[in-house]
Image 1 (cartoon, one colour):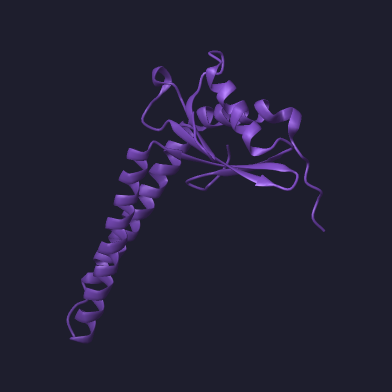
Image 2: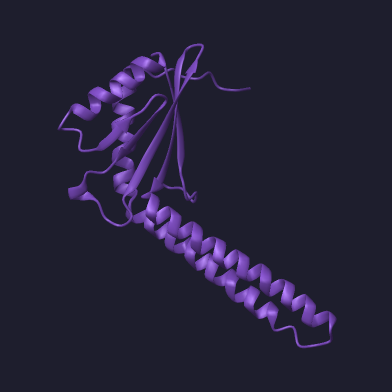
Amino acid sequence: MASVRLRPRFELSVSLDSDRVLERFRELLRDPEVRCTGDVHSDHVDLGIPDDRQHFWSPFLKIVVRSTDRGARLEGHFGPNSNVWTMFLGIYAFFAFSGLAGIVVGFSQWTLGQTPTGFWVAGVCTILYLVAYGVALFGQYLASDQMDHLSEVVHETFDDTVVREPPSA
């Protein structure tokens, strides 16, 4: 998956109604050949990688099933394990808050005629934020084969029912 989004997404329109879509996912998860785990809920499906193949960056696929006038639409988005996602959100929040505080302190120092060292804090936080973003993208790269596997499982399961959208003018 070539994407710079931290949580890549896809949409798939199918001719089945949402109840039949959820039933197909239940059948899929009962098949031992599929090599994915998951849960089917009332309007969404969670798919993941089996424990014996998981690593720190293993992806998680959440698919929301929405009814449409021509069947259903599957809206999927990939993400890391919730613990990894929460850790990165905490890191991003810390650097964003610290950088903002550095800007406030820097402007205060500047207006008081002092050396605005707070701006250095903001600069360092910006660099560290970008490093964390790069690490997350590298983790996504490491998980790309597993993301492709989960995506292929979904597309193969519904290949016979895909509704091709007419090209927009």
